[in-house]
Length: 319
Image (cartoon, rainbow, N blue to C red; front, side, top):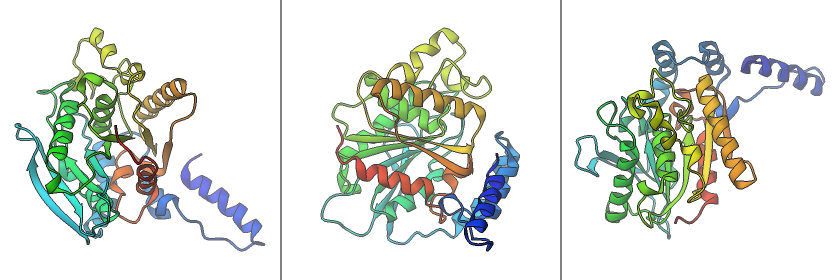
């Protein structure tokens, strides 16, 4: 049943409970009924029309998003490649203890995207007391697995080596990736040969990741990064490399994500459950699609962003 149909059904129930008076229903996370209807009508395929339609909703909201209380330090180089640059969002209000650090890696099908895709994310979390770094990184097809995770390691090293730039707690670093960025984050977190020693990573937030099980890649998108050699894919599969270091994970996906994204999240949830004997923390962004799940952050929708803040609060120490 679609979101709007469920809302209608809940409205009937609410009216009955209220003695026949229709009660107002809040949307998930602060989403309006109008936006929810538009997103639902777009369906679950990711097309240019869906991307444009989604940003027609959230572009104007982002243009009016709050930015107060944040110092931005743009275009800081964390590596040698021209795309090895990050934007820092630093809370202006000083606490007694150094704030946690969040690193965000954008999506883009491994072949496009930019650190500016995380502008709304940087402002939101810095306004809520979290130093945030939004990265650009090297792209496929020129740079393939594991280049994204190598760039993430370089960014972690830079942040740890330059505390004067941000004042954050270098022993409490959280990694967040959306779509292709989630693949880079999870690969860093599970393939120990890609990790820095004593990196201070306290948790990872995986949003709509596409390739946790690399045995089931999307040939139209993922092969630019993972290559055409099918025999090499199993060695790149994150769900088959979970038995080492156990970094706390929060998984998130959108109700109207693509079918392949839902399949990949089911695979990762099952794998983590088998490993740990309990379900991992999972957030379903009701009413959202693959683009709006992160585009809605800092526009008044507190669903995913509030859950991430709670996850950060519950994981106080890195490794």
